Amino acid sequence: MEMLISADFSTSTLTVEQLKSKQSQLSDGQKRLDSGREDFTGWVRLPAEFNRKEIQRIKEAAVAIRNKCDAFVIIGIGGSYLGARAAIEMLGKKGAGPVIYYAGQNISGPYHVELMEELADKEVCLCVISKSGTTTEPSIAFALLKEMLIQKYGKEEACRRIYAVTDQNRGVLREEADREGYESFVVPDDIGGRYSVLTAVGLLPIAVAGIDVDAMLSGAAEMMGPFPFEEDGAAGYAAARNLLLAEGKVIEVFESYEPRLFYFSEWLKQLFGESEGKQGKGIFPAALQFSTDLHSMGQFLQDGNQIFFETILNIEEPPLDITVPESVGKVLAGRSMNQVNRAAVEGVMAAHGKAGIPMIKIKIPRMTSRYFGQMVYFFERACALSGYLSGVNPFDQPGVEDYKAEMRKIL
Image (cartoon, rainbow, N blue to C red; front, side, top):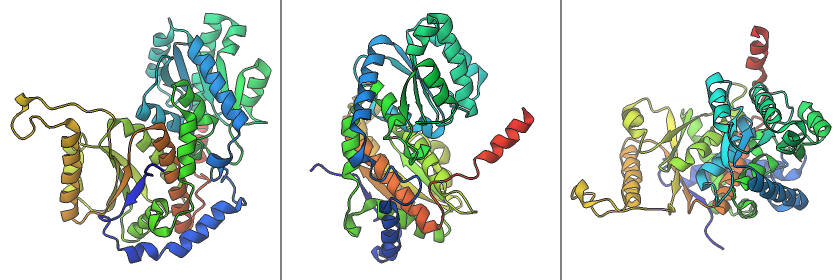
């Protein structure tokens, strides 16, 4: 078997004994995940037990979309779009096929006007992703873009260009999809939005981008374990987070040195923030892109208030490289950019280590579909176990309705 992604705790300031002190609790948490009795844990067995007919339908729909559209708009917010965008940004669109656009992830008038202007002379397909169909941002975007399609193609053809990913039986979007005949796919009842990347929510847009979803699911399955505790990076990471929080490290800074991981970091922020931030508990998830953000945040990280720890998403073998020209000077001339980037990783870790900052390095061998699947499952499982260690339900989000209620009052 090829390498799996792994976690390196050698710079975490934690001892092996400290990590092992959580082993019994982590074992209990894993039993809860495996029991099948916990709500919203359908993702736990998904990579091994996915609906093969649904995956085949997804791949067939993706081929149809790639053949008839040169613009594909993903309409969704939060868990309804971040996983797909993380995969597409990390892996890149493969081969011929539509340009991918995003809508409904904000309520900006200028953004959506400019998007519709961009789409005006293109062959367009829409993928609207919403379990209920009532979330404000995607509801507005879908209404706008649907009207644009009807004006452009007429009602019948517009409906053939709309793909819905929604609840199997209920909700506004399900009713509309059935009434109008949109091709539709299911958001499983037992999987919450932020854990839904490896369902139709993520896989349909990912497949439209030409990315290998079979390899992605296979990669996720490789991370299901079971593993001996000493080799269980996800469990060790959950333990480390819990121990560091107890030491007053209330902020986790996700750091990556590859811009392609920006949206994966955004997905991580939702995954951990929404799963753990309740009952006055949780670690605040932040994200920085290095080396860019070292020139704005490096001073704070080195010498500021140390209420944080760092989780480094390290790509061991980046897919492309280029040699630095001779004209740049003796120190850098003739080296590859990736070599310079690795020196930045090692230099930052050395400096931050001297400052006593806890650092956890997540080693990701390569940026491939298979490893993306591994990354998703690794962090989903780590997040669930971390929530259990903190004494919260990592699968609900009771606080997210409060601002929506206030917004409705204002409107």
